[in-house]
Image (tube, rainbow, N blue to C red; front, side):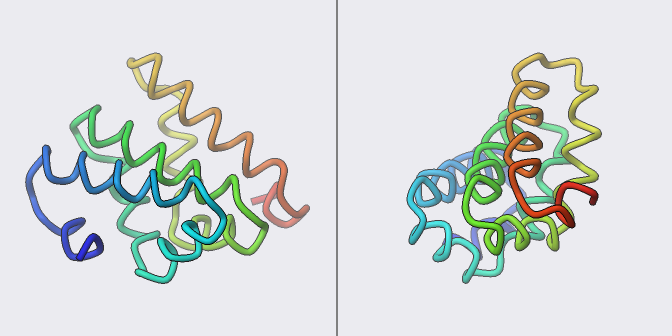
Length: 117
């Protein structure tokens, strides 16, 4: 159901579904459940949303995924998160910058291939 809701074109729904995915991702088995829904690419895409509330909630969800194991982090990277995270480092919103930097710092704790990506 949550994966389907990520396709809705409504700022409030997207914000809430990203928060739900973020909360699920606070535990290792929850990260696996999030990844298994196939939403990593959609979460990465939501990092480019025009709404900062959607961006922030998506950043929390992606950040929790990349904070997991190397395999879990790779799922977010394969979904295209890293290029969008680097763009968000230049956001005019300081909170978005902070969250993007946090997510990138989690990537740098990964494998050498992930760090070089």
